[in-house]
Image (cartoon, rainbow, N blue to C red; front, side, top):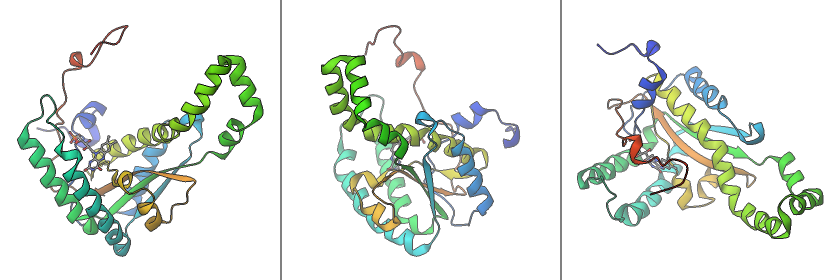
Length: 242
Ligand SMILES: Cc1cc2nc3c(=O)[nH]c(=O)nc-3n(C[C@H](O)[C@H](O)[C@H](O)COP(=O)(O)O)c2cc1C
């Protein structure tokens, strides 16, 4: 007998939290959607800025506009990244299955009850202090001139990573909460391929990063288990070894 979900342990939820791409069109009560966002809000954020924004798309016309963009990104992905050599332990049949289920998801986006867009707003307070001469002086004092230059150059490159590192813990909380509530969900990032285009449809300003689009619905398929390697295969101790 399976454990009732209310009694399931965190690990049961985590280990059966598959990417769910086949979803029913039935609407999801607003309270449940807000509960997902509430779980996301309980994640950590850099400097505890809590600068997440959530945009939940339910409107049919908006979904159709997103789907039109999504079709282009999915086709690009299929013709490029999806043609990369098989990774160790990746089976050709799994690659084919992934392609077909991905196509299914894109072709049903307009019927998906909710698309939760997870965004990170620019943290103005942090941006102001980072740009100040006092911060530059402190960087030279702490890391030397070379270190301060590396920080300034690397810092620009790190910006995306910084937004992502605030967004994705919230995303994972949201995915786990969806699983716990019996809702299917999947982290997707089609916006990476057409910078600015999803943002334009959604009215997201340039000071806000769109980090994830999460289709959510009652699942058509079954949850879990997720397939992952034995931890011993990916762990090294004290010094990195591949
Ligand atoms: C950074 C990131 C981006 C992703 N983007 C997409 C995406 O655009 N479309 C999609 O269908 N899945 C996307 N995924 C989901 C992965 O494909 C999924 O986690 C992986 O296939 C494992 O699925 P499983 O947990 O069911 O084993 C993304 C996952 C991550 C972490």
